[in-house]
Image 1: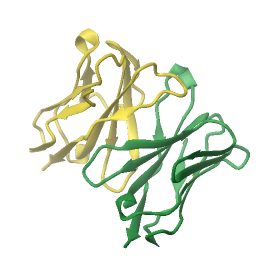
Image 2: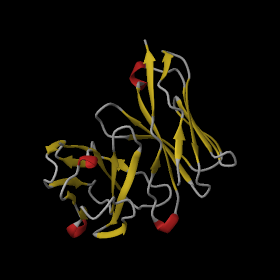
Image 3: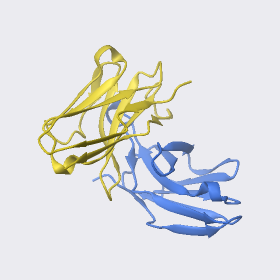
Length: 113
Length: 115
């Protein structure tokens, strides 16, 4: 069973702090990794994608990938109350030329003012 | 540019009834995906269309589910007859190329409740 596991949360951080979200995956052939943010009742929205080992930064967000450890993380610097949402980690691979996403259950993040 | 739209946003039906969900992808996106999230579980893949063809339907739970994408534009997902365990949020996503680095854009979902 190909799985993506996320730290269960919920995670609560004060405004201005760094929020750290973690994810592991079991399928070694996974090639692409995505972090989606989902506000309650809304559609998942892509905030970061990462395909190579190392760090990728975009504004306050940094995604980290370690394929040897099968580990993906998302760091949110200077957390804001508007960052409060569920964060979904997803992986995909090219099996059968179909890049379907395998999701984790999500981590609920609350940023307290 | 309009995003992925889904209709209805909510549907409440009784066990044994039929329900049809609709998804309109972003214009020009050949790839259309259906996913489902049941309560307490992760979002799971159901199937993938490339234009009007089913590329992968390995995630479809059983033959009570029928997806179509006539003309390669909008898609429908019919559940007939609905069972209690079909309750959940059904998401549709679309993407341009379906490639390794392609972004899947999600719709707001249809919340289906089977009583």
